[in-house]
Each structure stands twice: as C-alpha cells, then as structure tokens.
Image (cartoon, rainbow, N blue to C red; front, side):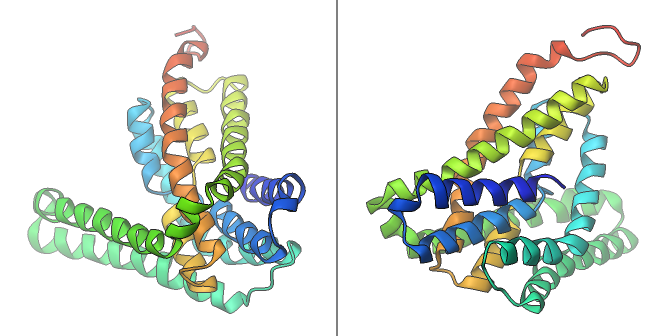
Length: 263
C-alpha cells in the first residue's frame, strides 16, 4: 500500500527537484509516469525466485503473490489514475482499466482454466511435468523479446545519454531500499520468523515490471519516456533484489524462532 506513494514521491523529488535542471518538462512528466506505473504494480512473479534464493517460506510467498495478483485487478487502475493525476499527468481511466483487463485479468483467467482443464483431462503430473516447463520458457522468451524491442527504440538514449538512466535509477533504487528496510524492520519488531520476514520484505520492495512495461507502452507508446522508465526498472531491480537476498541471508540470525529463541 505504501510503495506506490513513496515511488510517486521519489519520482517527483529526484526528477523535478534534484535533477530537474537537466531535464525538459516533457521528459520529467514521462519519466515520472513510468516510475509511478512501476511503483503501483506489486510483484507477483520474480518474488518466488527471490524468496527461494533467500530460503524463505514458499507457502507464505505464494499466498502474498496471490493477494498481489488479486489486488492489482482491483486497485491498479484507480491508484495509477490518482497518482498520475496529482502528478499533473492526465490519462483516461478507461484506458488504464482496459490495459489491466488485457495484461492482468485475461492471463489470470486463462491460467486458471488452462490448469483446471489440463488436470481434469491429463492429470496433475502431466500438467506439472509436460505443460508447465514449456509455458515457463515461452513466458521468459516473450519478456526478452519485449525488452529487445523496447531497447531497440530506446537504444540511443541508453548509450548516448546514460546520465538520464542514472537519474531514473536513483528514485527507483531509493524506493526499493526504503520499502524493504521498513518492512524488514517491522517484521523483526513484531517477531516474525526469518522465513516469513524475508519474503515479506522482498515482495514489498519489488515490482511487477512486466505489467508496468505493458501499461506504459499502451498508454504512452513504445518509444516514450514512460516506457524507458519501466525498462530502467528491470535493469535496476534485478541486481538490487539479488543484493537484498544476500542481505537477508546475512541477517537471518537477528530473527527469532516461534518459541522466541534467536536463530
């Protein structure tokens, strides 16, 4: 709940205040839009990988992932419209809602019915061994193709004006670290076990950049600054999350067993 607002704040602070003199008003508006769309999308995919690497509670992670998926269906369009609006960026609410239907609702419904049909017709073992692996590979391939297309449109900016990448990265970087730190500290205070605290903090800090990229390209175009900002989110988040996984593993001794004994 907090992350979309902190991302909107840091987008304004870094792009308008800290680096505002180096950017045009149009650039500031588009980059802020991309960062906001990134911050509104809670992670529902890669967090499973991060939690596994951090040796977190995978059942807990799966429940949070499901909650995030459902919350995006209801809250993404209203939150994105509100935060973009107070940032001075007017976007039709119905356009965002349609993007959510296409990029979130349809995949959820298709996944549910595909799983139900496959298990009913072929059995759970066939679904997990024969169907899931190729679908996982195709999903990764689709994401890579999308990134390649976006990079091809934004290649000049990325290679010739790397300082812009740094300006966008600064806000995303600080937001991830802040939200992660707050969640991790609160988890420690309320005596969550490490296995629950680590994925809770990781999922709080990470973003669903696939959805953010899709919505940004739909609303502003593939060559827009908003699309660039969401792509920078990918470049920023992966190394940061790997660092946070390492940090979690190094600090797991500060958390308690359910009985209250230190690990």
